[in-house]
Image 1 (spheres, chains in turn red, blue, yellow, purple):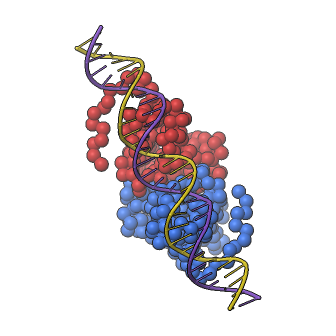
Image 2 (tube, chains in turn orange, brown, purple, red):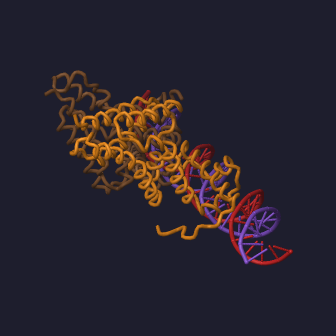
Image 3 (cartoon, rainbow over the protein chains, first blue to last red):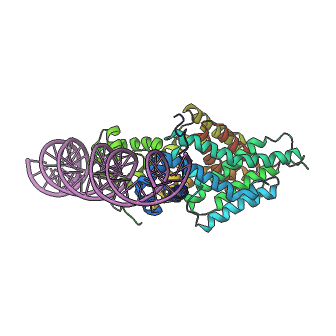
Length: 207
Length: 207
DNA sequence: CCAAAGTTGGAATTGACATTCCAATGACGG
DNA sequence: CCGTCATTGGAATGTCAATTCCAACTTTGG
């Protein structure tokens, strides 16, 4: 558990492209089947690469998993970017959460959260993965807290509200709600969970 | 996906005992390493049984996983029993949730929820497991809703409160909070998540 | 006590899977 | 233009998992 990749290997155009295709393919497969449920041969076939390419770019499967965690975090944050930077009103919070619920419905409530699923699977068995997941959740929680903090700074949210705790609570509601919805194949639990927490945040509004 | 075990096999004393030991051992291992991360040989060694015993009592690994899900659900509900039947006050809810938080701290925040972890791993890949998990969450959520319903019947909780939704929200907060705590190795997220939802429930108190 | 059925041990089978190796090809800087 | 290093293919290796088989032993009901 030290520095494993001190020297960034030189990548040519083709290399970068191949590496990216492997990560994306692995991310997709691992989203549906889990990291343990996704084999290197699976990824080889789906990405159209040879085993040596995967080991060339990632060292071993654990390295690939770490890259997938980072990739999913980047992808999620990028995808939600416009909204994520303006979570400074109750309406913005609701809209942002609603979109995830609609997205879940659109896929029949299969698959939970890309990050959450990996977290549940790897938190206890892979310490470097856990470190990556801590960072992932932090990167995701930060915009929520920032938005709430802006509301507080503008005097819209009570000064006694613990914005960090509220942000954590909302993130937890999202994760737990997604899990229940995934199991029940209905986004209802997700919507009820986030709604409850946002209502609670709303109760801290000044006025 | 139909009735797979129509005929209950006759079990002798030794049989029941062996079966039970296998389930308990498997449950313990799967709690720490996941279902996919726990091999039959692992279970054989830990429980001191031969392969034929496992296959004799459970048919295949999936059958064992189903048995583990039921076992964990029973164990959890039995363990929480006294409290679970009297979740009809804000204080009782807080105390009940606190115990889980203390329990989590006691194990260094390793391992999340026995049910939740299996749910995340199996919801999309094993339909019969998913069915068992739906039942597990229902059995767990029910006492919460019942307690809230009693509060409402006694006029302590506003008649406009949706007790089913609140119960789901609390369960989601527990699951999501546990996951974040497991990743961060600190029960803080769990405590903040359940606290927020219980505060929200409290806001529905009459008077 | 006897037969049917439950219980157990241990070996054998079959198939994946992670990883390594080696050899060939191609890009790119000096 | 050449050598170095990135890139790729494909086979080989060794391990380990899930499951099956069969043979022996034990319990139980009549």
